Length: 288
Image 1 (cartoon, rainbow, N blue to C red):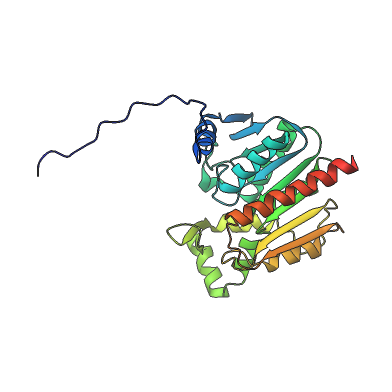
Image 2: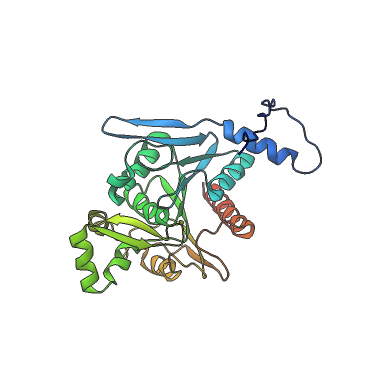
């Protein structure tokens, strides 16, 4: 064939502050968000964690992503925009081995990611914080609340996956469990990626068992809001009910969205999340 036709690249356009009718401002927000810089929390004995921090009033809000996710998802950025408009502090970050953080994903464990959350809390925040945990982040937020009760003022879970990987593994037939142990690998089914599964090591599952919370009362006493979609094909909504049942806190609401999926990222889901956080900020500010 003849030469490939390639268009000349467009010259870069300056980021001008203009607000035409329609989507101009949205575009500007997007352009400026891409420019907003990622910082790194350096730790002597552990990989560096990438994060973005918005300075502001307390209670601050911290977003904990799900398994194999990162800080740039729809929920994280919607919460950041909301906190910015309210003048409240906000942090989003990537776990070790995920997104822009250092470390190898294959070497990560629930325990290491739990320590990431505690590093963020200890090193980057002062005063009361509201943790918003998505899926696995919802499991980790419970651990953070147990470990740092003075700092964690409230929790918001979205499709909380407490113990889920361990529970799912233990429900497999014994033969299947033995096969996974021998192979050292489990292809864990999911609807969240193109392959249709996550590849987990047997060691990951064994380590995760040390962090199960649903087998006994959960010593968390702060206000808790748990949002879950009833059409969640990855993490059953019943887990949110179990968490509500097990926590010692009496101030617990479970909100079920009948048509909600696992990601809970459509417009209405995001609105519900933001409103839930808004109510908790009000509640904590009134108490203070």
